Every structure is written in C-alpha cells, then in structure tokens.
Image 1: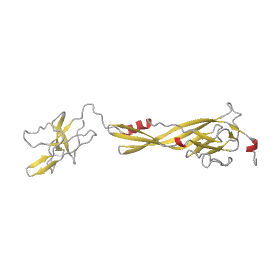
Image 2: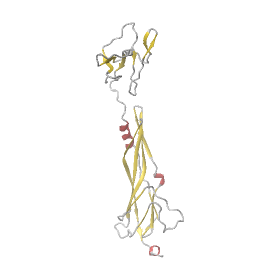
Image 3: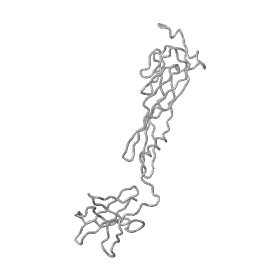
Image 4: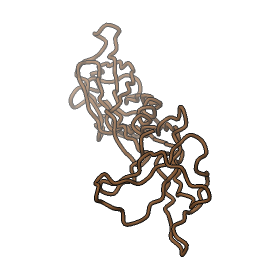
Amino acid sequence: MSEPSLAHADCSYVRSDYQPPAGGVRPASYQLPAAGGLVVRPAVWNSSGPSVRPVASQPGQGPGAWYIYQCATGGEQDALYRAPVWIPDAAPGAAPAPDPEALAEQARNQLRLAGPAIVMSPVADQLVRLPTWLWLDPAGWNQVAATAAAGGVSVTAVAQPVQVVWSLGDGGTVTCTGPGTPFPAGADPKGASPDCGYTYTHRSLDTPGGTFPVTATVRWDVTWAGAGQTGAFPGLTTVSTTQARVIDVPALTTDGG
C-alpha cells in the first residue's frame, strides 16, 4: 500500500517505527474503508491535554504501521499537535476499486440490440412509380439499457436508436431520422410517406430471384453513467432484412390512370 498523504505544504504523515507509550495518551487512529480513501478521526483538545475520538477498529491490530507527522523543511513547525496514527495495510489480494469506464465497457457488451422488423406499404408487392412507405416496428424502436456492477460501483449503458439507412436493393438508399410512419388505413395509395419513403423506377421481376433485397441499418447512440461519471461510446448498428417484389401495373402507374 502506498503511504497516505495527509499533507500541508511540505508536511505529511510518514510510516515510522513509533510505538505508543504504555499507559500514555492513545494516539489517533485512521481507518481505510472498503471503498477506498481515508476516514479521518482528528485529535480533540480538553483541559487535560490532547486526546482522540475512539474508532471502530483498535490501533495495532493486524498488519499495519504507525504514521507520524513530519515536515520536510527543517525550520518549519506545525501549529497544531498531530498525534501519530495507525493505518492498517491493505488486505492481501484486495482488489482496487473498479474503474467506471471498464464497467461501462462491460455494460455496453451486455446490451441486447435487435433490429426492428421491416414493414412496407403496399404490404405485398411494391409498385413501380408509386410511393412505397417504409417504417420499422415501433415496438423495436426503443432505448435499451444494461448495467454492470462490481465492488459497490454500478454503471449503466443506454443505447438509443437515432437513424436508419435503407438500402432498397435496386441501388437506391434512403436515410431516415426515425422509424418511419405506418401507412394509415384508407389513405391515398399515391400519397408519399411524410418522413420515410421511396419510389421504385423499375421492377424486380427482371433480376435473379425476382426480388430486391431490402436492408434497414439502424444506428444506436450509446451513453453511460455511474460512479459520478458519464461518457459515450461509438454508435452501434443493427441490420434488419427482407425481400421486396416490385411489379408494374400499367392501369395504376400510368400517368393520369
């Protein structure tokens, strides 16, 4: 264990060979809590001279040492009497306090992100030169959280979906800042989506397999917080896929029809 620094200017407590005098004034005692740091029990004054507040663990028990207050500058004196203190050594094998950033990494790795299901309208075949509405199942467009904890420190990572890039299989792409709007029942089939749509210009029946592969790549922003700290990770992505068959119906797609 490193020597504690209870310093003022060039003065500090240093490990020593001090032994308390038999029947003398009991020195102050300091205790290292499990969470780290130093619990200070300062000396107090009364009419009979300096005394100390009692502590939970008695000085001199277990591995440790007495520390006395010394000043590096020869002529400097401390204005207040500072009794020697007993500081126990760290327990063998005791782990240091967990690093919040390391716990944040664990929490991020525990995030269970699933690509939201793709929905398109028309529900069956898409039509050449008529708008296709694109959206993702709203139930899958929600933030996801995971927590990692160790040694009394807890950190939570939160992933929030923020953007989706659609690849429509014919070379076209669309970027939307949200999940998209479901097609309302009874709406005009020639109306375009207000926020996430695409219009095919040629049919898929002329391609191998007769369909276009459609992918929706969602970007998730990931932040974390815990132990009084916050941070962010590079965005994560999930990919949802489906197949779209695009046909042409002259009676519906001809201008003025």
